Length: 234
Figure 1 (cartoon, rainbow, N blue to C red):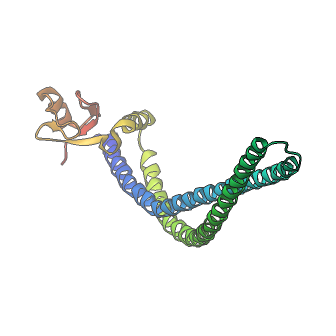
Figure 2 (cartoon, rainbow, N blue to C red):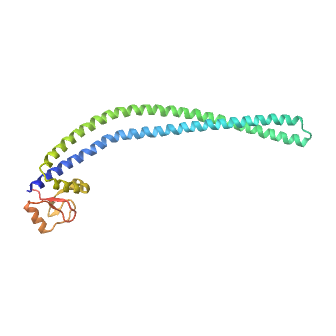
């Protein structure tokens, strides 16, 4: 078999082995990512609660201002009553006074509801803060495990790629570049065996001439249909 082809087959197997390791890292890191997402969601919830409390306090201030305005209005009405000159004017002032008192009552009720809402929000805020503290501790613990486990896999990958580099030294650089170009799209099926005179990458049958050349094993041949590097298993 062509020496470069023989080494390419080995490199393709090494790359495949490395590809199987990478999802292991992603799987380990996914546990951490889930917790980080949970932490982020809790932070967003906390921000929403904080904003709701601020809005409720603003609404309380608005209602307190409304109460004061209507109290001032009632005082003015009481002064006008003393100077009223007719029954009609007194009835109008009485109606105005009643409306002002209704507004004060309504504003006080709103303040009561808003204060209760703030109390409930603060209880929820405490729960979220406790959850955030718990998640932070869990994240720190998970980070240690993730770092430990991913470090082991990365050490294995380093050994795998060192092995690849050693083999690559014995291959013509142009061949390596050619292989890497194919690998960009074919991934772990860049170098495939011919089975039943068909490419095991695209599964299309190759013609007799190319199959005959492959049997000579003296050159690197690609599939005429998909472009993968072919070889015949011995």
